[in-house]
Length: 172
Image 1 (tube, helix red, strand yellow):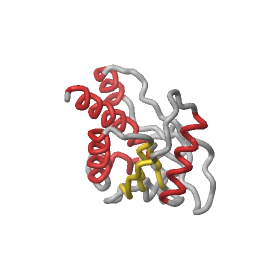
Image 2 (cartoon, one colour):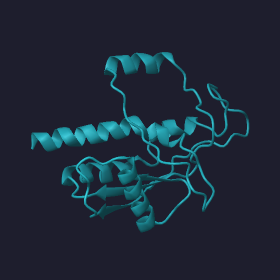
Image 3 (cartoon, rainbow, N blue to C red):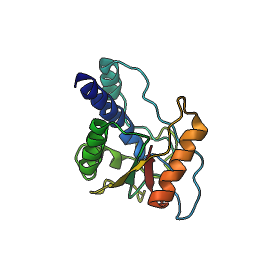
Image 4 (cartoon, rainbow, N blue to C red):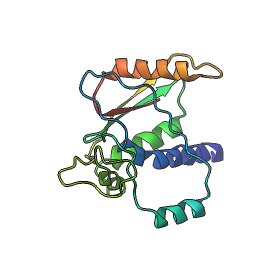
């Protein structure tokens, strides 16, 4: 029970660290192919260090477009941990439209890299309710040591299952 609880906290904690990044993922026109896989890994920092950094720095633009109407699809590859699946589905069913996720609406499209404010008339990232669009279990066997090509194939299977949607984030 303790292992499942720790695993669930780890998974949810990693997602909390990645969610503000949704706002800065490239938005694409319908039918446009993405620019390759995006791998976001949390870097080891202490909570005190992250808190001090967050309180002393303003939000800075990374440049480029933002997701104005994001949607999330979860693909559980192999035999998913039921606790992790429950945590993730619960989290994504509630985060859209929340005050917590509203931080993403500070990001705007095409602001210069490093900018701390947005020009008048900018397109801002969205925080719609019901961002979570669905889950799926991909029963394809998971290699003992998956490499990028394996993960890319799993993501392509998820897109084939759910369909391609501009502005979607597919978690594998």
